[in-house]
Amino acid sequence: MADNLHKFTINDIDGNLINLNQFKGKPVLLINTASRCGFTKQYANLSNLHREYFKKNLVIIGTPSNSFRQELDEEKDVKEFCLVNYDTKFIISEIIDVKGSAAHPLYKWISETYGKTPKWNFFKYLFDGEGNLVESWSSITKPDSSQITDQIDKII
Image (tube, rainbow, N blue to C red):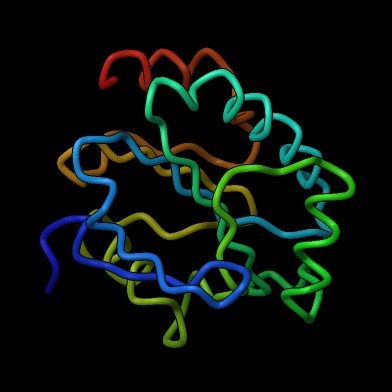
């Protein structure tokens, strides 16, 4: 089993392979997202957070998922939805599962290593520059809340 976040790869929304090893030394905020959820407006908070922390090397990765039956069917539709409605500039992955036997290996690792599985869309996981989980937050905590930014500031 992998020992940190940097051992994983994931495809971006355009199908390009992203090796998370390239983010060594940088904090990573990982969020499972969905386009048709009551929390979808948090994409705006994520975009604000990205603008504020981009130069401070915070990496944000949104992972669209239909694990809770609230995501669009096609990557191209998710990409268009995010760009048109929220001007997203952070990394967005292909549509993946985030729980259960079909979960992406990254989310399986989080569940098995840290005992944390998304209970709904827009769960947030903050990893330090070494690829270790620092903290996680539920859907109700906005990405740019002081609870999250205080933790980011501590590890930047």
